[in-house]
Structure formats: structure tokens, C-alpha cells
Amino acid sequence: MVSSLTVAALGGLGVLAPVGNRRALAATRRTLVVERRSLDIKGKAASVFGIRQPDGSAGLALDPGERFQVELANKAGEDTVIHWHGQTPPNIQDGVTETGSALIAAGGTQSYDFAPRPGTHWMHSHHGLQEQLLMAAPLVVHSAEDLKLDAQVVTVLLHDFTFRPPEEVLAQLVGDGSHAPAMAMPGMAGGERTGHMMPGGRSGHIVAGPPATRHAMELNDIDYDAYLANDRTLDDPLVVRTERSGRVRIRLINGATSTAFWIDFGAIEASVIAVDGNLVRPVKGSRFPLAQGQRLDLLVTMPAAGGTVPVLAQREGDRARTGIILATPDAAVTRMADQAEAAAAPIGLSLEERLAAQPPLVARQPDVTHRITLDGSMTPYIWSIENRTWATHRPLRVKSGQRVVVEMVNRSTMAHPMHLHGHHFQVVALNGKPVQGAMRDTVLVPFNGTVRIAFDADNPGRWLLHCHNLFHMARGMMTEVVYGPV
Image 1 (cartoon, rainbow, N blue to C red):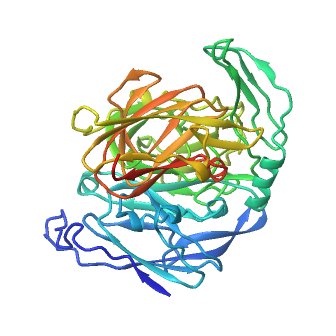
Image 2: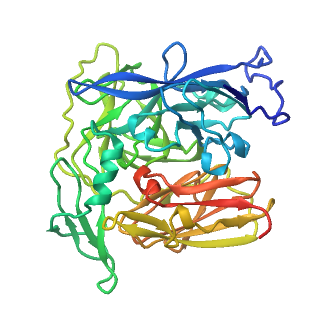
């Protein structure tokens, strides 16, 4: 079965390459295959999914000016649909059955054709719980500016992994959301901070907020067997050789279904140059938060004397970590422990507060404002928007051409990385404080926090807005933005 979703007149094919030969980029049809594969994870075989090109490479990297012309073959042995996270295609090509895309039957093929958005993006299943079984891959669209940046490029996809079937994991969450009592830890602003490490690494509670309103926050709701960087643990990490004093651009993608990370460079300073595929004014540091679904482009300079630079991703509220190692020629690579010395704090808005888009949205007054609440708890394990799950959701209605503002207020017991399909938005307020923040497609709304975003309604259709914790979405935290009469 072949179904064509080709859409004409979405930008010409005759875009000239930005290099000196003025070579016109021909229409290049790429092939992607969704299939089963086997991984060795901590010495144990695991059957997972993959999205690969015929040569075995994961995902796609497109040249500047190249259209997204893809033939997607489903050899996974079951129905699926793939969402192009970060892209803004016509609605029918978004890869979401709830808003119009068709499932790709086992053995079937689907065609896509649209003008892609440059930047670090990714692709993943939007059907059932397949994403937890690693049905995900990078999607990098190079720009003309990329070619001017003298830096080696390394793309890293993070994931969390369990040997248990994801349906079993979800059934356990729904059937038993109980937790052991928390243990007091001092030092959280705005209230008491407590924490409890559950067997297998799950984090327990943090109590925060003013005494009259505070309640327990959950950091991690699933015990995972491993955390992966490009399919590998720190038992056998990816080692990338670099030049001494060379610059490295790291395209980091958090493809984990239920895990937020701290990205840690240790004593080395790095610069954030883009988030979710959008350029920002560079922000320097050695430690950066990265929520589920988000991306960070980081620039780091290798030591002139040579050596290694571990790029580590440590799970919030936990000691568990994964990562890769950058190493200059002949530098000795020593094994890194997959447990840090201390548990990491919760991630939050510390980076978000420092980000500024380059360029920002054109200034204008909003035409429509939607205010929504994020609700839910571990017991019962139900997550919702406006106390409505997807089954009874109330769409956010917009009209083409409007400047739309959405304010998200988190009243639930966990932080939520909220992802909007079909658009990129600017973060314009954090906890009530106006900012000229980053352009994004996924933003963290922290526990007891409020985030306001703004976007232009320039892509008609029905577009999901949901939490990018897969299990929260599966249990109801999803609505949609719908174009039409308001």
C-alpha cells in the first residue's frame, strides 16, 4: 500500500546551494525504514525499533535548501506513524493520527514532501507506546549558516530504556501509584525540600510552595534499566575523536520518553547557540537542563594540550547518567561511572530565563489569549489539561493570521515539557515575569510554575499541544489548537 501526501508549491525545488559553485539542488528522494533491531544493553539483548536509512545510519541529515522528500517504509511488523518533531509541514503530513495523518500499515509505505525547517530536530513514533521502544531518530536540517561555522558536528540522541514492555510499565503506573514516605532535605527555595530514592532509581517527592498550598512533587515516575546516548551506555560509550583546540558543535536531542537530564561538561565551558533548532544569543556555562523533547546546540572548544571532554547527561533527582566522550588524538579514554557522586537537583527554568531568540517574533499585540491549567497526579495516574483528558478535551480555537498567546499554569504534581505541533513559539513570560525568550516548540512548565508563549497562526489545521512525557500524554495530557471560527 502506497499513499502519497505530496503537496505542491511549498517552496521551490530550485533553491541554490550556498556554496560557491551555485549548484542547484536536485530533488532528492530519501528512503527511511522503520524496523526491528537488536541492541546489547548492559550485556543483555534487547529487541527495539529503529528508523534508519538503507545504509544503516539513523534518521536523516538534509543539506541546505533540500526538500523533505521522504519515502517511509514500515518493516516494523506492526502499524505505526512517525511525527517529524520540530518540523512545520502541512497538517496531513505531521504524523499524528488524531489530527488527520493515516497509520502506516505493517509492510506499507508513505510519501512525504514539504519544505523543512532548519535546525536540530528529531523523528519519533506517535502511535501507542512505540517511542519507549526507541522508535526515534535524529532529524538535522542544515542551513547556509551552518556551513560557515568552523566546527566538527556531533549529533547525540538521548533515551531512557527498560527491558519491560511499555504496556506493562503503564499498567503498573495506573494500578499502583503509591510511594514510600519522603525523607527531609533542606534547602529548596519557597518551601521544604525532601527527596527519597526508590528502589531501582526512581525519585520520590519534593514538597514546595507556600505552606497553605504546597503539595508533593514527583520527579521521576518510572524505574529504568539504562540511559542511552546514541544507543550506548557509559559502560561502552561513543568516543568521538577531535582536533586539539578544535571546536565541536554538539546537537543534543532529548528523546527520552519520561526523563529530563542535566547536561554536564564538568570543568569545561560550553555555549548554547540554539534551542529546539532556533538560534539564540549564546549562553555560556558548564551545566544545562534539557527536558523531554527539547534540543540543545552546544559549542565547545577542545583543550589545546589535548585530552578528553565527557559530555554527560544525568537524570534529574537521581545519580544515573549516560553520555559520550570527546577525545583529542591519542588521548587516553578512561571509563566513566554510570552513577554520579550525588543525585541531581530537579531541572527548572534557570537556562530558560537567560535565553533570547535571534531573531524574536515581530512585536505585535496578541489577538487571542488562551489560559490553560495542567492537572494530574501519580495517584490516580491521570494527567489532564483543564481537568479534561483527550477524550473530553476542549480545543484552543484560533484564526489564520492571529498572534496567539497561551498561558500554561501547572497545578499538577510534576513538571511538564509541553510540545506544540506545527508551529514554533516564543517564550514571553516565566512565572509572571515578562521575558524576550527563545523560540521553541517544547517548553518546560515546572511544578507550581506558569509559562506564557506566543506564536503566529500561520499553518492552518489541527495541531496537538501535549506533554512530552509519553506516559502523561497516554493518560490524557493532550489537547489541540484548531483553526477556524473562534
